[in-house]
Image (tube, rainbow, N blue to C red; front, top):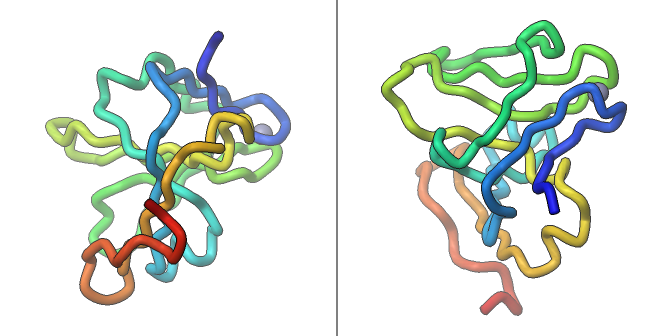
Length: 125
Ligand SMILES: [Zn+2]
């Protein structure tokens, strides 16, 4: 089974080594507006990324990261750090098949304030 995050129209496809076991809902102004759930990956676990011609990007605040969205359907797909030495990537977990997230835990991050992860939501184990 291929593990792929796909935008709504299918133009942007990102293959990963494994589906996420936990995803992050961040309350910073940008993530809140996007409505995304982030899954974080080491660069080596992202098997294929879309050609840059398929996405537009947006950067804000420190301009440390480029947020990509599909040029056709507008889905926010992933972010990539501008510093090539940073190993972390973020992929919008909402673009994985719904079954892939059934067992994933949702972590809430206080990106608008402390930058820290908050407690697990009620009922989470
Ligand atoms: Zn698309």
